[in-house]
Structures are given as structure tokens and as C-alpha cells.
Length: 557
Image 1 (tube, rainbow, N blue to C red):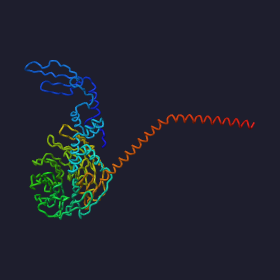
Image 2 (cartoon, helix red, strand yellow):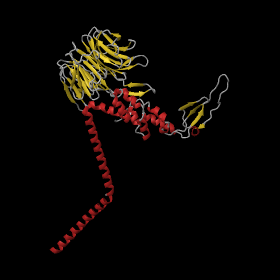
Image 3 (tube, rainbow, N blue to C red):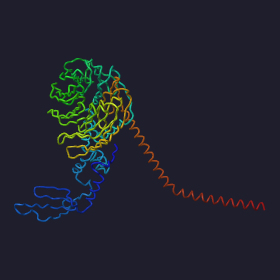
Image 4 (cartoon, one colour):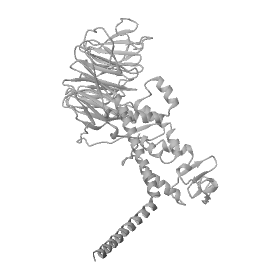
């Protein structure tokens, strides 16, 4: 992982380290640096001296110390700190706790001690979980975290995130007879779920691209599908939610064909077509054209709350105790437990707001609309819920029907038959404001500036209705009834080979330079001798030529 310095970084390392070293070099500092206290007295440590702080009692009229006595720092701190590595390890750890990944990488290059301390710091686990959550499989979490550090896992995942800029191959999945309205990627089990106008939910193997199972016709168009390791739900235009529970011993989790009342259920309470569904650990979410979002309990299958809107609900995305919804042209944020409306974005798009996506932390909210634009908002919940617009993209000429986010990539699908890939890393700067809470520093751009996407994927001539993204694959479906997988898994291997060849070439170049310098140092004297010999040879040739001419002249005479 390459670490680059940022000009506008929140913590300027060069300046701070320079000031830090200057303060250490000075004999006397005006600003108090460290304050320690106990039950008897307070002592203010300075880098050149130590002052016992005097305290005055108003009632008694006397003070515990009327004059400030200077104590040499060597008596209190035997080993006076002259560099940051001389500070206590716990204090250095707290300093490193304020840095972001790039700054930690820069600090780790200073010395072996800082490299060890920065590499083993617990903040790498927080960085990883903040962006991608815990490792997707329990086996990976147990094996890799024991054998490899969180820094190595973070660097590897960060490197893998660059694969969407590399080469890809396109796989087509045939099976649907009509348009595909929804796709869902369950990356932890390497499964893909699709459905659409043919009323059938299909399950595919993401690695091999083969059909695993398909359900019976459910009686209406399926516009939304969501799944996790224990539950699969599908929302139909007849206003019902059809669900499947996992089957013990089934390697593919769900048995879509068998009609088992213990493993299959339906929920009827919506009065209009269901357009979106979502899952979390304890609840099921569904949005409908009846202008409501219903929250269901997963265990009892009872409706817990109803969120009433003023227009058709097109999309929803939950996060912890809040859920964001798109209804008409507005976007709302609700409290799940109380059902209260926390914030609203009026007229987020010109026309309907069709799609939503949210980051793993919930602080970034993305919206796509009928006007072909994509907006990025920052959601803060420290003092109330506040939403602020950050950036805007217009990569499409038609409505944006679907959005998917896998840090740092935002993928959008539109009716123009194109996919756009947007990297949001350059808009974000992470800094630790406290020991336990992180806040994102976002580069706020002028609303007139429109950011271009990093990449556009073509290959469709018709509407794209849904898209989802995994670690190295992008899956989309559209009007032509074919599910396409953009496979970037080989891009990582190609990039590794390119880097290995680049390193080998660099090593060979350095070896040749070393040999050249050694040869030049050894052959320096011989070169001087050879030059002198050449001069003598030339001089000798001239003398011999003159002698021959003289001899030939005598013979003629």
C-alpha cells in the first residue's frame, strides 16, 4: 500500500514534528506541556525546568507556596525527552490514535520502534471495520486475525479495492424470460439472487456463474430481493413479502422449490406494490407505493412500526437505529424505535428520487434520481440529525434506478444502459477527535462543481434496473432479461504480476549500476595507463614515419 502525503491533511506531520523537535531543543518553554497531580501538590513539567504551582486559599489568607521554585528537570525526569521515541509507550499510542491510515503509514517509516508500534496498534481494526465491517466469513475472521495483523488485512483490502480500475471479464447469466428488476449479492456465501417480471426468484453461484435453484412463480412481479445468512425475502407488486428461512445442512442455505410451512412464509399488510426490502439483525423493512414503510420483527413476523410518507416510496436503506427512505422527490431519515422523522431533504432531485445507498458507518448517504444525477450527503447525529450536501455527479443521461456502495466505490445503474464507478476516497479525510469516537472530515465542494466518475462501463443497449457490488464483482440486470457479472478477480493477479516484474526490473537495474560503479573504480588506473600507452604509440608511429621518410629520401639521392 502506497502512502501519500496530503497537502490539506488535518494533522500536518512535518509542521507538528518540526515544532515538536524545536520545543524539545529549547531549554525553557513558556507553554506548559505536561501537568500531573496528586493529593499533595501539583507540579508543572517543562522541558527545561519544573515549577511547583502555588495555590492561594481565600479564607485562610495564606498560600501553600508563595514563591515558585525551579526544579531541574533531570531530578524529576532522569532521562529528559529529546525525541518522540523517548516518550512513554502509552503516550505515543495515544498520539498515534489521532492519525488516519496514511499518516500512520508515514510515521511507521521513521524508525523501527515506531514501525512496530504503528503496525500493532488497535486502530487498524477500527479502520478495517469502519470501512468494510468484520470479515465476511467466520473462518476468515478466526484464521486471518490470529495469524495476520489488522494492518495487513487493511492494506490487503485497500489494495483489492483498486481492482475496479483494472481489467475485467463479462459473464452473462441466462435463465430469466423477461426483464430483471432486482439483483442482490450475498458476498459472504458467494451467492446471487435475481428476480423480475417472470415472477421467479433465482439463485446463482457467483464464482462459477451457474444456476443453483429457482422458485415457483410467485404470482406477480418481484421488484425487490434481500438476503443474509439466515433469511431471504422478496417483495411483490401484489403487496406481499415472501420469505424463506435457511435449511439446516443445505450448502446453498435456501430451498426455493420445496413448499415447507416451517421454512416459508408470507406477510400481507401493504396495500400497494412493494418496491424495496431490506434486512438487519432483528428486523425486516419494506417500502411500497401505498406511501408507507413497514418495519417487521424477524422472529415473530409482526409489524412493529409504520412510517407514513406523502408520496410513493421508491427505496430505503437502514443503519443501526435509523432508516433512510426516498419518497417522491424527497429523502427522509427516521428513528426506527420511535418512528419520528429526524431529517428531510426536500427536492433532492428534479423528479423522483429512485435509489439510495449508505456507507457502512451510516455517515455518507447517496441518492440517485430521475434527473440522472447522483448526490452525496453527510449525515451527522452528534447534536441532532443534520444532513449536508457534499458532492454531485451527473454521469448518466437517464434516470438512476439503482445504487450500490462498497467502500470506496459507488456504482450506479441507469436507463441509458451504462454503469458508473465513483471513488469517494478523495472526498474523505478521517481523523480521530477522541479516543472512542471518530468523525469524518469531508471536503465540501462548490455545488456548481460536478465531479466526473472514475470509470464508465458500457455494453447494454437497454434499461438497467438494478445493480449490486461485491469485493471484486459487479452484478446488474435490466430490461433484456440477462444478468451480467463484471468480473474483476483477475485484475488483482495481473496487478501483482506487474508489480513483481517492476520490482525485478528495478532490482536488476540497481545491480547493473552497482557492477558499473565497481568496475569503474577498479579500472580507473588501467584506463589511465591505456591512455598513456595510446599516446606513446601515436608518438612512436610518428617517429617511425619520419624515419622511413628520411631513409627513403637517402635512397633516392
